[in-house]
Image (cartoon, rainbow, N blue to C red; front, side, top):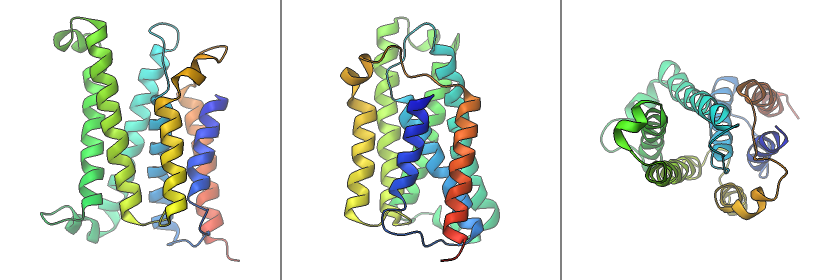
Length: 208
């Protein structure tokens, strides 16, 4: 639970490194959902044991996917400009975001039992594919966030976010030293995420 809360805090804190200018309640809330999805995705990249925490890992994955979809639908429903950006010739960061969501949906779908057994007979094969696809989703999400220029528009912010992602994705030796594998329930994700989203929106729209 603590690790998830710290990851959420770090991702959101990186967005304030260059100031707290907002884009309005509507845009800030929609983007906060996206940052919450990114934080959840990075937490999902931490090592997970086959037993004990596997069910939590799977359930949390659905919530992360749902948060990413909510982020996209929020803007599609309320801003016609976003629909134009999904046409051919759209900015690279928009395509990266779309690819990221589709890959995350595939990641969650392929991991479901018993569907997983139809694709991967051996757990080792599944684990390699699952983690490789996870890396692809993280890369797409980072490109979407950094290339958009919203909230994270400076090199120090980019470096901070990439460093957070690298620690989550490749810090297996450190995570293995913890008394138990990092684990958190979906409720913890929603509560910690809700607090982060609330502060994100209020701090950017609360005046000087």
